[in-house]
Image 1: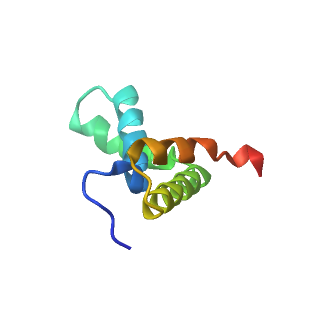
Image 2: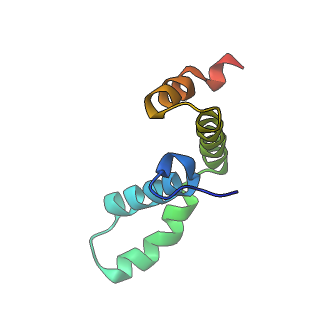
Image 3: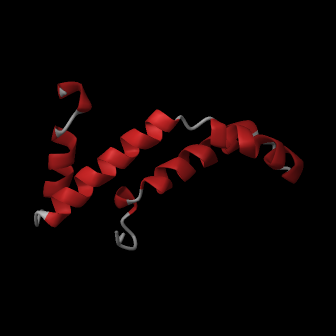
Length: 86
């Protein structure tokens, strides 16, 4: 399916990269050697279940926009949905 440019809430890979970059920021000294050592660890630090949750959230955003909601309305609808309800 098509993802709109500049809508990171619709692309769960942005959340993955954000988590990887945060890990690297917290665990690197700025050298390329440390970056090479820590990149596999950073990728492994993102749990598959977390990626699945982000993917499901992305689909809720897409459905909200598809139903004609504007950003604020879509945000409220997505926030109202909670996996703890199910």
